[in-house]
Length: 234
Ligand code: DC
Image (tube, rainbow, N blue to C red):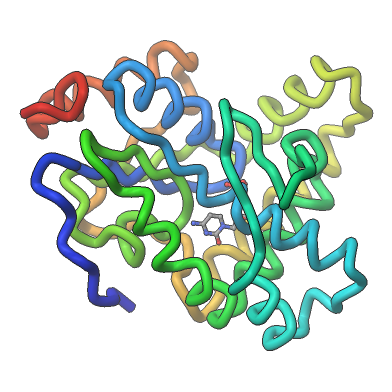
């Protein structure tokens, strides 16, 4: 499953943070990137935009070749913590549960993953990158300097998602969130290509009992131990 990787620039260490949905990866990865002055890649957002674009254009989410072809030319940009599909700000539209499920379905297609592989690797620039997803340490950046598997119990993750949705004034039901997360974990872990797994070279950080601040601190300590300091200078 490990594919060849263009050499990571020496002055651009990669911190790969993989883990299941709603484990807090995004929040933690972004905070770590900010603290260390590194670039940040939210790879889940890429699959979410592809899922949104496929749904909006009426493509069947199971049609691998059509979605892969669309993914090759899709225009996604990240500007000031906002996500754009062409000129449209889709930051909020991609964060819904249906779009999470759509992302998980399109992400199961090898052709789609291949279409966005090099583009993701191009995010690795000096002074370094924090990359969050499912296959950052296994496929996209196998030579990452630090690989973290950030996880939490499915109950804790469902509760966090519930609070997040409620705080945005959105409708949420804890039982259906629990079921959706369980199904998504299953699809992301059992797919044939780049499945979500904890690999032997990744350090597990279980955030079930940790606050966001504690989780960020823990990851920053691991960065320090790996010789990655502010602005990636080691
Ligand atoms: O991290 P997230 O919940 O935003 O990701 C949405 C979906 O995208 C997730 O269910 C699985 C998929 N994904 C993936 O397959 N590989 C990645 N590197 C990131 C996300």
